[in-house]
Image 1 (cartoon, helix red, strand yellow):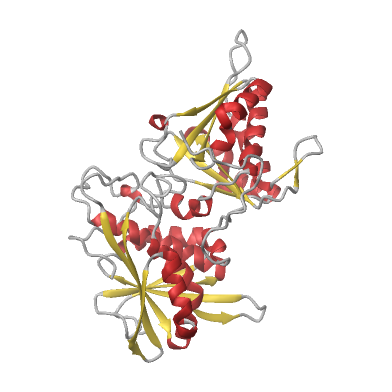
Image 2: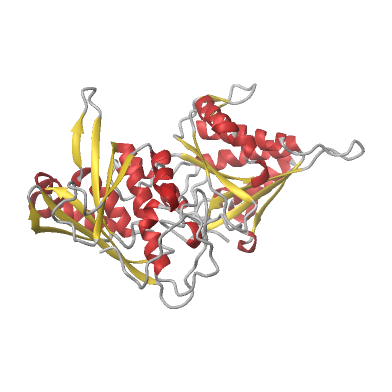
Length: 443
């Protein structure tokens, strides 16, 4: 079973080893409250509503962030990821208790899903409901307790059936490191148990939760950043569920940033202190090609040998570099606008465009960033670009640009592993990705 070495009832003081500004690039902080609720696909409309009206209302009412995953092939559930600060600011029902925005949103989402349950026969007992949630393995111990004491106490107090199911029952939308928490009973019993369990999870955040959006989004939660199990926010199309079982699965993944010459000092730092820190904390190779500078631009290469199932050192370094290597413009209102430029081989650019521009349109809608792709025929293509490269240009406020860069780099990483797979005939090309030949990597 999962690691249960947890300080029950205490929020972790652990801080991830990335700078404070990186919290916004990943979206979830180390002390935030996070839940992943599994909603049957047939009921997802009760959360989304026509044109997204219901989910927008839930966000506005609770001040929590709510993200809903795409459909994952072979999975009858969709992941609803709910997160917010841990500060308990929202009232809870008719009581005087205060809960975090995420807890408030979790209960409201749950109530809407349960309301969709078909009523039982008039001769039946009270309707039975089942709730399922994904919980990171390093967090599940706070629910179980030493020798199972915590979960047994909650069972006794609420009369709910609470089970932590084995990995054999994990849905395709789960991370390989997840545990599956299941609550069943009549509606009142289940809601009471959900309240207690949510409180335990609130008090004991996962040490890895800051990676959930970056990974989960690119899913099997990840499919894109951390792992192969398509999970919340599947962005990886046909390769979301791929697990490399033939060989070591190591691939080189690299990115090439175009950096204004005047920004190089901010990238390198005094005596090379900043770039050394980025290398050390991310685990990636970061090289500034000063000799390649032409005009006002120079080139920065970020690379690492990676396993698809693991977190990406290259993306980690890229997120740290972005505020330093991007062009900056301050509006009259004082809002800072970043423009990040990334060179991508023409053979890979299709994974960012999609059929009829579907993927780039989706990324623009999700992030609200201005994302453009410039080719060799465009006069704005920098001189440091090779003839077989195109440039992805991301413009927006800091948080917007960070989210967009994460979307772009995660898709590129997934495409690197996808193109190296020997047989993809069993996968349909749902996202319209170009599939080049060979094992060309972004370098």
